[in-house]
Length: 157
Ligand code: SF4
Image (tube, rainbow, N blue to C red):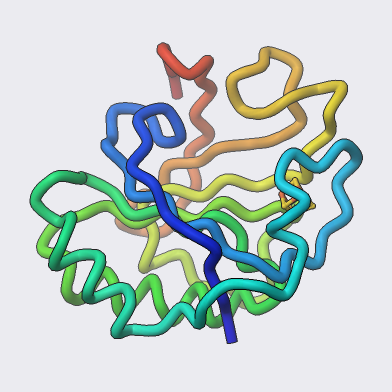
């Protein structure tokens, strides 16, 4: 089961998208200089289809993308909920930010438009830093991953 702490509408996590970012807790990772230590705790409310449907009902007209921020404790539930969100989202893009360096075994990309991979290394920074170890990909219709490099205000494939 996944739990979430809160959500926010953000403008820089996904290039050219207005994104509803859902911050998921129980993070099993141990990134050096973790920027969100509260998300490693077992706190928050269950993230269910009902919650996602309610968020889309409330914010679907104001956003272009939904991003699951975390969820490495149960990535196949992310995969499942992404499929549910896609099925009711009426054209919204679907994204996942994982703190792992590789995708889970047999993970299906067909429900996603964007994937971020990579642990957070404080000295290297996040996707907006030139030397980041993190990688951001657009997912094609045939599920190939195309890396996008971006600085928060600019990006290129
Ligand atoms: S993925 Fe890393 S930075 Fe993000 S909450 Fe988990 S430990 Fe912290």
